[in-house]
Length: 199
Ligand SMILES: [Zn+2]
Image 1 (cartoon, protein in one colour):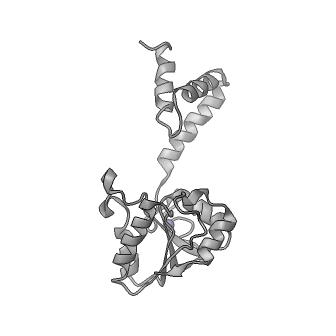
Image 2: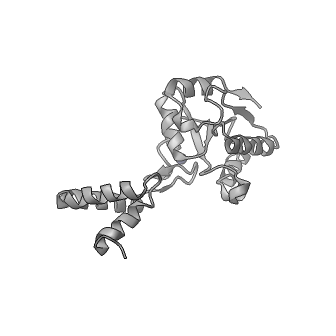
Image 3: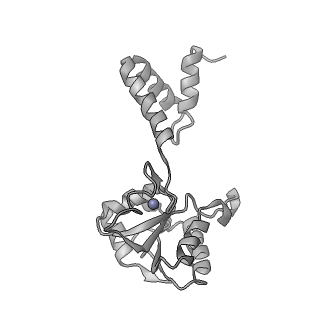
């Protein structure tokens, strides 16, 4: 039997589902919310529901967005013939912080991971090939992380993209090998994109 009243135990169980949140943190968050004014807890619950209701994936690039196509795909000033392929939508924010990239994106929502049963069909690769087959793309920058799985994903994409007439580049090794691209600072990431090479 739980040490807490049922509503508290239920909230703690839900909070524990968040990445990086263990029992201790979940308890701390739950007690903070219990002590917080009602309107604060209500605002948080409302924000959560609003986010779930209003966000969807961009039908072009799979970025998470509240307008479809997303702000990058519908921008008049962006170069739509240059596509940066990233693992997660969070990487877009990292690339945008560099202020040096003016192309558009394609979000895979993961990396190839045979051990975890993630093959090309589990990633959003098909829509990338649709974009390229429509001859709307000159260059694809493979900006997956320089981790084992990120490299395997870049290799798989490069092999399959070579069947099309499109320039394929890989970000330079400025991002430390084995690290997640999202943790690279702006200067490192900016240099990695600038120093990209054909593969
Ligand atoms: Zn988009």
